[in-house]
Length: 394
Image (cartoon, rainbow, N blue to C red; front, side, top):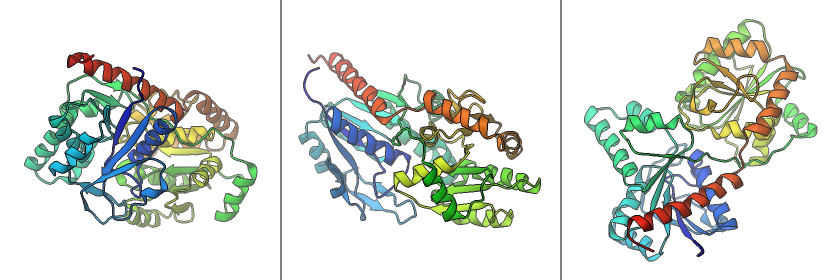
């Protein structure tokens, strides 16, 4: 395929909404436009949007605004003129990064004009459905809505092999392609000066272990296990600091739990940080990333930590722990506070081991976004060729 492609990158979350999928969509759009083809982001309108900051087109469609800390808008892609707007743009392929409103939008578009659609399944949506949808009929509707959007795609991508179990729970029985996400933090060794500056900022004593949690402040990321493990370590007489980097719907409840657990003097709460260089500094200062989530399908933060030669502690057999070798490219534990505390007590003072595992993670598990998007673009061409053959096009 010789002609320059035009790709629609669909996402329900885009800045000012900040989450993992928002980050993915930005990197796809930026690198596709820079290195391969024309890419347009297709996403719901947001009253706080500042799309002029981006050097590529962002097409916003009608939405309902939901005031929240996360700043999500709910897409409303039901007007016929919206479908025509996409059709007139003559896209070669539509790539949705969530089986929600934007995927439904793409379904409505391809009813009028056949365009190949790729769907990347990033998140275990059944967690939110089972937790937040109160009645069985409503849950059944939600599952069917997701399943219909997934089945409508010409090709389904997942970010890890373990994501397949979530797809099967939704009811999807088709094939899928593993297409891992990349990392937008460059491989680097954070300078001693930057480390010293952050330590001074937070009054972190020299020589004590520094743990890091980075991500959304939501209980189902297993944050309670981290706090209970740290409480146990403190009760055993260990000194350390736990950096909590991020924001989210449960942050006030998490802060109350920290106070109740007697950990307030051990916890550093950074709040929302968007500057990627500043975030990299916090990875660099940390001895280990604590990420016991079994919710995440890939865990971008694990690769971000690896970029800075910081190892991660992960739950054995979780999606985030795929391809991690225990005590070689990371550390593995069971899904319990006792197991987390037990592993940390064995390694938290072993600086040489932490550094060697971090360096191995940097060399073995780090994936740049340049490499990830290049692989995706190559696959786009295959999807388009398969679609054309299937539909009798040459």
